[in-house]
Image 1 (cartoon, rainbow, N blue to C red):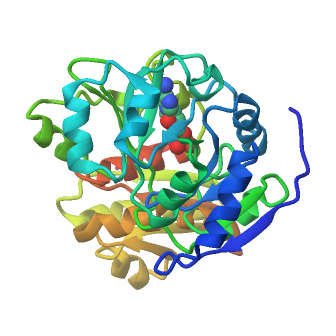
Image 2 (cartoon, protein in one colour; image 1 turned 180 degrees about the vertical axis):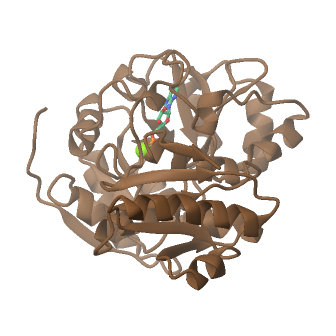
Length: 361
Ligand code: AMP
Ligand code: MG
């Protein structure tokens, strides 16, 4: 694969008090056909001018992303939606009114002017309006919709801080806008509205239950959206690649979360068996079960409370990155979570990051 060396400018911006000159500098890079990493409320994105195929190609090269994995077009107004999508159904307008700006991406029929590089040659386009003041200002000042996947090297955990982006993409992109930590920590929920019933292509920051409530109908949740098995490539091209993965071994230990004491003791059995083989393990666990590992002298990292899965989602990717940095650890054993609300996004990312290394206890 083609490699590159780019002069990267890192610009810090306070999301509470945005310096418009900094945004304009980044927007200028977009307009000139450059690449800009920017914060959104979900994870950091790596963007380029949607209408400039050469600029869009740079995004793929910077990330080492396979060219057949399409990007999401980020917009700041409903006018831009009608610029890039055609045959927009009333359901899209309804969801947009309710959840935009926010962590929801809609799959729609693409307009002629969206180049095939953005959609990997598909007739559909993924579009969302992000709820982050820096992202919205950048799109507005650029004057074009911004095509962007997550701002990580392909296969790595998605970046939730500017530092993560610097680590993956310094020397590979033109500008990195660093505005601190993102809010959700998992990517957007992708809903395919070119089908009826709509299909969930990826669970994310907006629970699919909320989409169903707003539409007043069922959204189909295929097994690949739960992170089980490989995707139907025709449906979700991006799903066929290994994703989100730490370099060290990651195993997901799933079970019955009704009796947490019993569940934790089964996880402890798994970890003890591994330790007997010479593996140095760490457990990624909930706040509720952490005391059981503590009591047994087993090393653990807390992801957050089961009672507030939002925190678990927020900590997930940075914990995957942390595993690689922990000394004297060979493998991580992550507890499973119930697939409700944000729990579905957490389990989708966890199962994929493990390379489908799942133990049921
Ligand atoms: P990322 O935000 O890095 O995960 O990248 C964007 C995701 O959007 C990819 O994983 C794709 O699977 C998905 N996506 C974008 N455009 C399309 C499309 N036209 N059809 C299906 N999935 C898409
Ligand atoms: Mg990604």
